[in-house]
Length: 72
Image (cartoon, rainbow, N blue to C red; front, side, top):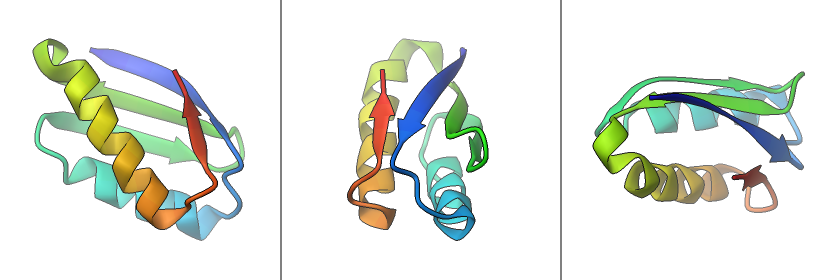
């Protein structure tokens, strides 16, 4: 399943790259793209565990940028 999410308060391109790398390491994620310019996250992940994977993605992003939010 591939989904796109709006991101709020993503402050720098370096943070976006760190988030993208962290998300790609999560079990069940096939691909992830964090666009700083568009303030958007695109995730391709296992359908059956998508919500569980999204919870892990939110935690990973908060470690990099505590103020950043992923609107679901």
